[in-house]
Image 1 (cartoon, rainbow, N blue to C red):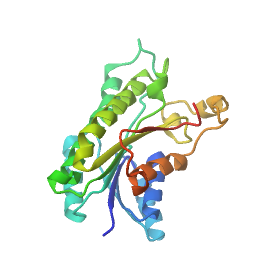
Image 2 (image 1 turned 180 degrees about the horizontal axis):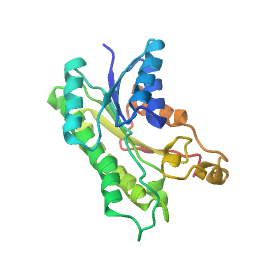
Image 3 (image 1 turned 45 degrees about the vertical axis):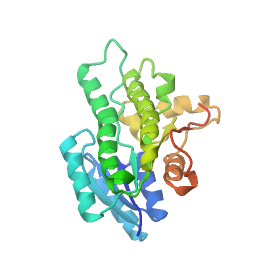
Length: 248
C-alpha cells in the first residue's frame, strides 16, 4: 500500500515543490492551503495529469479545529499517515524591534510555532507505534534566519524558526522510541514568492551575490532535502537540522 504524506502550506513555493517530488516518488500526498484555492486546484490537476496522487484541503495550520478536521479526513479517506512536512509559515511584514506590533507577533507565532505543534501532535497520535501507527518521519521547516537573527527586518520570524529548531531536537528524542524520526531543513535565500509578500521583492537580487555559492537556491533544491529526510535512505537520521543555504 502506498505511503501517505501530509504537507502543510503545500500550494506554492517549497511546499508545492515538495508535493510534486513526493508524488513523483510514489507518495499519496495531502496538502493544506489557507487561501490560495486556485493554486491548490492547479497543483492537484498538474499532479493528476502525470498519474500522481495529491489532494488539497483548506485549513489554517494555527486553527486547531480546522486541523483536527483535516486529520479526521485523512483517517477516513486514507486510513494511515506515514510522513509529515510542517511547511506552513509566514514571515509577517518587516519591522524593527521597536515597531513590531503585537498583532504581527501573534500571527507569526500562531502559524509558525503553534501550527507546527498542533500538526505534530495530531500526527503522533496516528503514526506512533504505541498508538497503532506504522511509524514514519516528520520534517519541519526552519530557516537560516534562526541562526542569523533577522536584525532590522524579521527578528520575529527568526525567533519563530529558532523555536522550531528547539522543538525538532526535543521531539526527535521523545519520538524516536515510538518509531518516528523528526528532522528539519534550514533553507537560506530561496527563490519563492515569500520575499515579495513581505514587501522585499528585490531582496534576492541584492543578497544573492553575498551567498558563498554566489546564487540563491530553488524550491526544488529544498524539496530534494525534505523528501530525502522522509525516505528510508535517511533511516538512521533524526534530530538533524539540515542547512540548504549555499553556505550562508
